[in-house]
Length: 339
Image 1 (cartoon, rainbow, N blue to C red):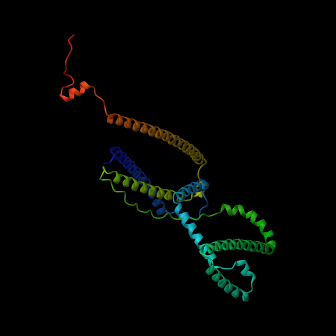
Image 2 (cartoon, one colour):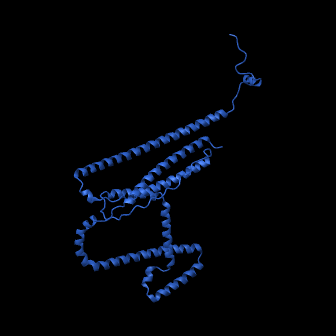
Image 3 (cartoon, rainbow, N blue to C red):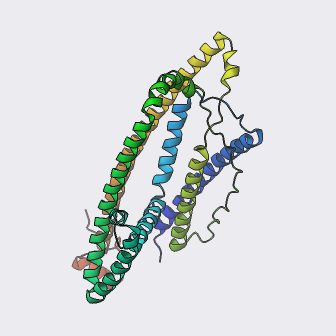
C-alpha cells in the first residue's frame, strides 16, 4: 500500500508543475505574438548599427550561452564527427604531405605503391594492439609534420606577398587610416526577418489516478520534461535580435525629449539593478527557509518513529489489573475503603 504522505506530496508537486507550465506557456505566447508582429511589419534594411548594440548583443550572447549549456550533447556530437573526419583523412594517407612535396612526379607513384605494400605486410605480421599503437604514433607524427609544413608555407607566402605589396601598401596606408573611422560608422548590419512562430505541443494530460504513487511520479517526470522544453524555446525566442532603430528620425527629436529619454533609461537601469538584488535576496531567504523546513521534517519523522516504537512496546501490568481482565471487572468498580 502506498504511503498517503508520499501521495499528498506528489499531488502538490504535480499541481506546482502545472502552474509553472501555465506561466511559461502564457509568456511564450506573448513572445510569439511580438515575433509575429515583427515578422508582419518587417524591419527596415540598410540602417546603421544601434547605439545600444553592445548591451543588446551581450544580452543575446548570455541567452545563447545558457541555451548551449542546456544542450551539451550537440557539442559532443560535433566534436566526435570532426574527430572521425580527421581520422578518415589521416588513415587514407600513408605518407606525410611534407615528404610527398619534395619527391618528383616520377618517384611519387612508386613511393605510394611501395608504402601500401609494406604497410600491408607489416599489418599482417603485427598483433591488433601493436597495429593500433603504430597507427596513433604515425597519426601524431603526420600531424606534427603537416603543421610544420603549413607554418613554413604561411611564412613564405607572407614574405612573398610582402615583397610584392611594399610599394603599394605605403601609399594605401595613408588613405586607409583616414577612411577607417568612416567605414566603421557606415557599417550595415545584416537584417533577418523573424521566423514564423511554431505551434505549441499538447500539454501533459491531467492525472486521473491520484492514489497511485507510480502514476504520480510519471506525471511529475513528464511535466519536468515539458518545462525544460518550454524554457529552451522561450530562451531561443527571446534571443532573437531586436530590429534596428532609425537614428535619422531620432536626430530631429527635440532636446527636451532626448533628456527625458536619458532620464528614463537611468531610472530603468536602477530599477533593474534593484530588482536583481531583491530577487537574489529572496532566493537566499527561500534557501534558508527550505533548509529549516528540511530540519523540521527530519525532527518530526524522528518523533513519529519514537512514538510508534513506544506504542508497539510491550507493557507490564500489575496482578490486580490481570485479575480484573480475567473476571471482566471494570476498572472503576472495586472495593472501596470507608473513610
